[in-house]
Image (cartoon, rainbow, N blue to C red):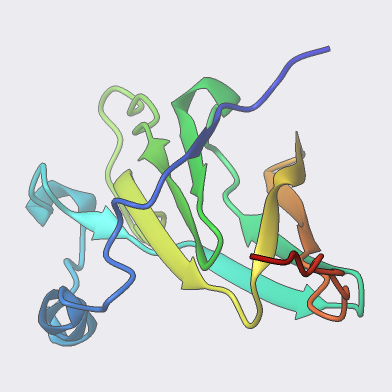
Length: 150
C-alpha cells in the first residue's frame, strides 16, 4: 500500500496575515500560453469541502500530478495541499492551437469549519482526485474534574 505524506504543524498562517498576497493572486493576469508563464507561476486546483456530523471531507481535483509531488499538512484549524504538476513533453514541430492546462506549483490552504482531530486523518489519491477525511473533535464531551480539599 502506498501512502501520501501528511505533515502536522501550525506554521501556515492561521491568522490570515498573507491575505494581501491572496488578493493579489486573484487579480494577477493569467498567461495566455504556457510559453509566457514564469517559473513561479502557480495554478489553483478546484476543491470541495463538505461535512457530516462526524467528519470533514475535502476533495481536490489535481489530475496530472504524481502522488510523490503532493504534500499535505494539517493542524486543528486548516489543511494545506501543495505540490507541482510537471509540464508534459511537447511534440516536436507542433504548434499550440489551444493551451489551457496549467503547470507548475500549486498551494491551497483551506480553513476548516470546525476543529478537527489531527490524529484521525486518512487520504487517498485515485485518478487525479485527492480525497481527505478528517474526524471532527467532539466538543460535547463532558470531563469530570475531581475536587480536592486543601
